[in-house]
Length: 216
Image (cartoon, rainbow, N blue to C red; front, side, top):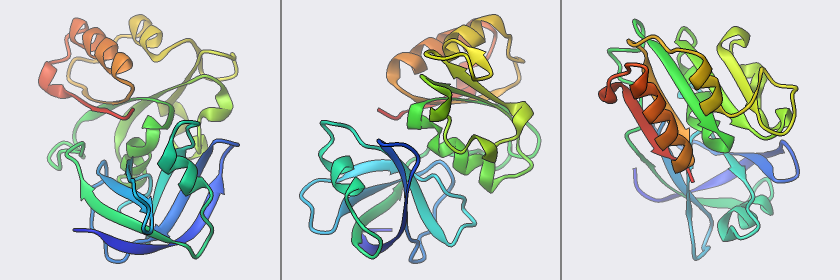
């Protein structure tokens, strides 16, 4: 789908810097894991955001962290319900293989707002067999943690000990073996992705079963 305009339906702030932007779907068809390119209408720059909502929702949602030097994220944070967005997409190939959804175990590893595609994965496919590792600084940055299966969601915190595990996702994986037939999806910063990929391969995960998207 090419570029079109869409009305903002809701803006939900999760903390002072992070918010969920909901806007009209306007018939947009996407596969969970894909992203859209957003900007305020007639704005000179745009930014890619993974879709946070389910394939079944009547709207589109994205999870955005306002960055001090981020021209687009700051502008999006100041928009109001009823304002118009410029939307482009969907794009991307960080999607689930349809033949694996019902019969494979998945490992999802995210840092920060890299949780977005996994939120969409798990909402869209409620019977998915998965373990989700989410690396954050503080437990309150584990956004919408109640949307995930409690026994399948590990919150790895580096600045407090209120999560499931005190330490980085890489430290958790160093201490916990992953079954070698697991399909792994990684989303976050490049350093985490490189380190986690190496750890998984050392544990016997085949490289073709490690799929990644650098989120920032």
